[in-house]
Image 1 (cartoon, rainbow, N blue to C red):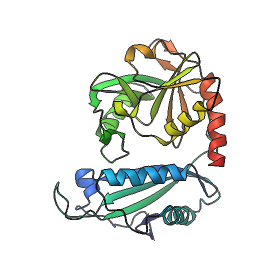
Image 2 (image 1 turned 30 degrees about the vertical axis):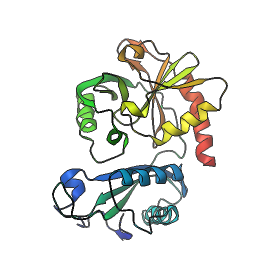
Image 3 (image 1 turned 120 degrees about the vertical axis):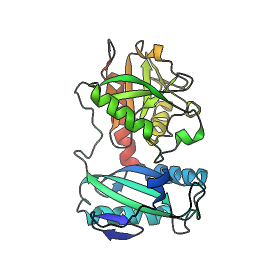
Image 4 (image 1 turned 90 degrees about the vertical axis):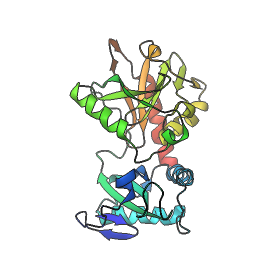
Length: 281
C-alpha cells in the first residue's frame, strides 16, 4: 500500500501519468527514513531537511505540512502495510504538480509515501567484504543543488551499474576539483589515528542525516577529533578506516580500496553510539 496525498492506495493503482514533473524533469525531492516499532529515527532532522530543500527548489510548502501531520501520515502508511511492530524503510517523495515545461505552471506539490520491511531494528555492522573504487566517468558539481536529496541521481545510477559490472560493492564519487565527495549511497568518513574526517558540504556532498548525527556525536567525544575538510584520492590508501553512512544502514565499513585493507574498530564504536542516539532522538 502507498500513500498518495493522504489516500492509502494499492501499489498497483495508476495514480500518476506522463505529465508527472518528477518523471519528466526530476523535479522532486525525497527522504529515506528508518522507522522501528512506530518510532521514526531522527524525524525532526529529516523534516527540517525536507523543508529547507523544498524552499531551495522554490516549491510551495502546504499549510498542513507540519511535523505532526507528516508523522501521522508516515505511521498510517506503515500500519496499512502491517509493519507497525516491525523495522521499516519509508520513502517520502515530494514533487511539483503537473504543468509546464522547464518553467512550471504551479509550485504546488504532491507527495507519495512507500514502505518496505527491514531485517533488523538496530543499525548493525555486517562483516562481509565491502570493496569500493573511484567512479571517474562523471563528476559531482560542488554547489548547493548537489547537497539536496533530489530526484536528479543520474550519476548514482550509472555509478551503481559500473560498480556491479566490475564486482564492487560501492563507488566513491569525485567533484570536478577531483576531491572525494561521497559514496553512491551515502556520506564518506575517513579515520586516521584519532582524527575522523568527512568532506564539507561546500565540496558537493549530500547533506546527510547520519553525517550530521555523527558530527554531533564525535564532537562530544574526547577520544576523537572531527574535521570537515576536503579529501584527496591519495588520502584513501593512507587511512586506517573508511566508512559510509546513510539513514537506513547507519554505518557501513569499507573493508578494501585497491590494495589497502581497512580496520572497522572506530566504525563499530560509533555504531553503538549512533544506535543510542536513534533510540533517544
